[in-house]
Length: 346
Image (tube, rainbow, N blue to C red; front, side):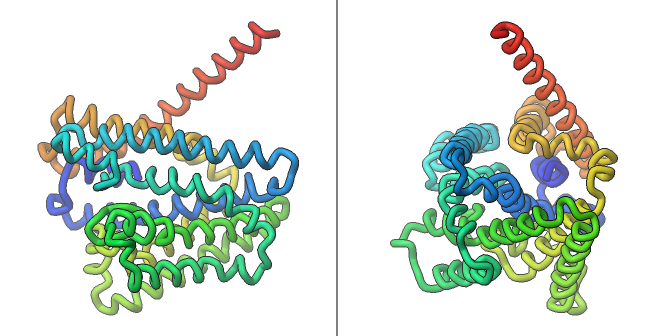
């Protein structure tokens, strides 16, 4: 995500060299689906087992509060993304849901999802296995039916928020919801395999195999134009609303990466320490990298459409360890503040 934003926020796709589109930028298209799947995995691991417990209401409310925090950051970062190149009226339209930003729109999806998913989790925990396993397909079919047969009372922005709309770059709740449900399924399997290395490796292998099958299906549909199709996907073709080929490619890569991460376990996490640091506080990592790109690189340094692709790529690569360092420093400050408070109240 950081690599994608760091280059595309400074240069249009038309300025990317062929090798920048394929393979560099094409690989970043795995991230959007991976984020949503991992969101579901985290819910399954951290919250579903607590459904029905005495402290479930407080855990549910914590998720709801988190949604409000994400919503506040989403609206603030909308201004950060748009203030330099857009008129005030366009910014107000985005703030009032008459239009949508692009780079920070994923936060809008999470903010809304965190306001309804907590109430869905008890239903998920009590649902029979056949319904849980069929739920991603059922939600996908519901999304398709609504997209084809319902006009959302003539409000295209509402359609965009629910099932997506070709005129708006946003993430529909039902359009991406199947990936959340898929993550819940994977998370449930991970809970059962967590203390059994053999089962965990089997799960990892299954995810890699499923990802490979999705990528193979994409290649089959693309026929003899695989590179051209990947180049189009690198330029976001089929991303909003989600097209079949884009989703096969993006979800296939996401599942393969998730499987490799499970197989690598703690050893891989230590080796990829900057990545795991970023993932330990994904929201603040998102805030930091958006701030650096749009305030420092675009506005203060004036790099927007005024650098080469190689330079933009180098900056984006440097932004990854910089973001990790920011998260580390933030954690140190929080720990120091906690220790100071504990010492004062001891």
